[in-house]
Structures are given as structure tokens and as C-alpha cells.
Figure 1 (spheres, helix red, strand yellow):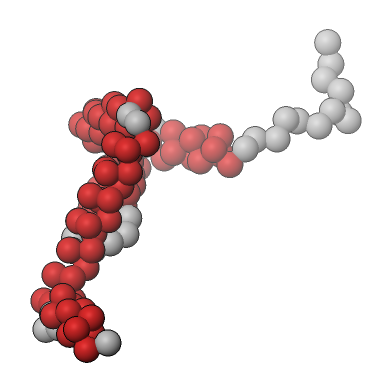
Figure 2 (cartoon, rainbow, N blue to C red):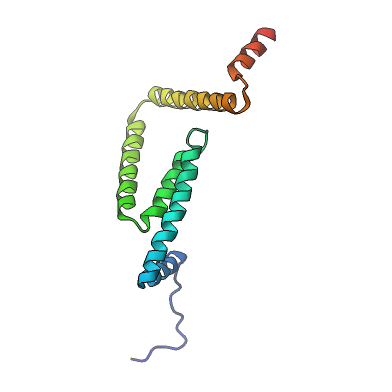
Length: 142
């Protein structure tokens, strides 16, 4: 049976195109090494930035996990570590969902206190300003 020349081929999504390009490059030995180097360096940079941001408020851990996901494209050990991380995160979120509002609130408050202490320590170390002393001076004078 002849193919209809007016028939429009199915559109490929971006994900399919990226996967096909990745497979095409990996088919060549030099391309395979180049991809390992590219994803290794890119993932390393993202992980390093994430680790540097962990003590600061913000998405430090999320950036580290993003770097791990980049590594997981080419490295099996990273895929296993990423899956382990996802499993532990799911266990944590499932546990939190089962808790009462009181426990959820206490966990949230503990998280905010921790972030506040990290911010105060960062300000003290970076600018030599004691936030707690300034706050206490403000409270006692107003």
C-alpha cells in the first residue's frame, strides 16, 4: 500500500528530539566520551553552586538535586543516588502529610527558626553585624 503524500507525519516533541539527538551522539565512541565529559562538568558546576548555597536561605538542596539529575543522564551511580533521594523525600513528605496540623506547624516553625539563625550567622560573618544585638537595642529603646 502506497503512503499518502498529503499525510502529515506526527510531530515529535522536544523530549523526543532531545532523546534522539542524545542517542545519535552516543552511537559514536567519541560522542559518548564527549557527552560524559559535558554532563560531568555541567553537573559538577551545578552541584558545586548548590553546595555553596546550602547554608543560605533558598533552594540550595534543590540545586544540588538538579545537578545530580544532570549527572544521572550519563552516570548510573547518579541515577541510583537520585532515586534514593527521591524515595527518602517521598517517605518524609508522606510522614508529614499523616501528621496533625500541630506537628506540621512545629516542623515549619523549626525550619523557619533554623533559616533565621543561618541568615543571622551569615550577616554576622559577612558584615560583622550582630542582628540579635541590634534587634534587642531596638526593642529596649522603642
